Structures are given as structure tokens and as C-alpha cells.
Image (cartoon, rainbow, N blue to C red; front, side, top):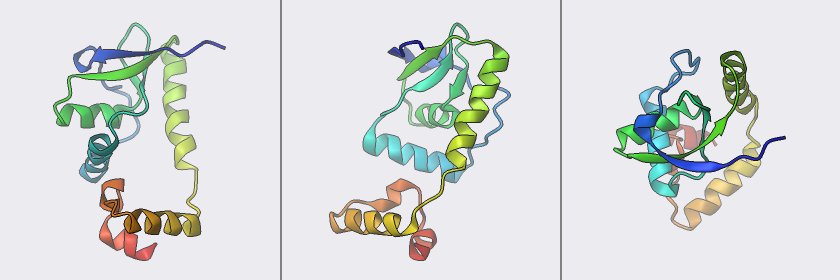
Length: 132
């Protein structure tokens, strides 16, 4: 198993995967931008070594560009195009298959609100928060 090394690179060295199967509508990009502004970058983008192609984090890359950022943290992974395509799908699909524990989510959101944390920055709109 290889050791991951995080390194800082110019955004201009990176490009989105042209075969990316996930789209990032405005609502999603707004949530990503809010997260980046609130918490900064806390996880690196996953990039195919030697190509600059983003395998994991295309939405974050787009949001960073919209925010005018010039650099970000990445991890390079050594793999061919077939492996990179498979990893991109796996990274997105495994997260998509997770489910919310509605009771725990409700308690956590209530606790954050009680501490005056702006939960709107987390990606839920008012109608979604009302349902929770």
C-alpha cells in the first residue's frame, strides 16, 4: 500500500475529468463554495499522477475556481485511465449510497443552531431543514 503525500499546486495545473459522470448544478456549487469559505480546504483533491486530471473533487475544483483561488492541496495517484475512471465512479457512488440517520442529523443541526452556527452554509435550504 502506498503512502499518500499531500502537496500544494496551482489550480492552473489541474483539469476536470472530461468523462466525469457527475454534474454540479448551481445549488451544489454554492454549497461547496460555502463549505470552502467556512472550513477552508480540509481534504485534498485526488489527481491522476502526471496528467493533472482530477479523479475525485471535480466539484471542489470548480468551486475553488469560482472563488478565485489560485492553489489547492492534492494527492497524486499512480494509475492508468481505466483505473482512474473506476476510482472516480467508486468515490462518487460509495458516498451516494450512504444514508442519513435522521434523528442524529436533527440533533446535530439543532445543536449547531443553538451555538449560532449558520446551518444554511451546510447545503440544506429552508424547506429541507423544515422537513428534518
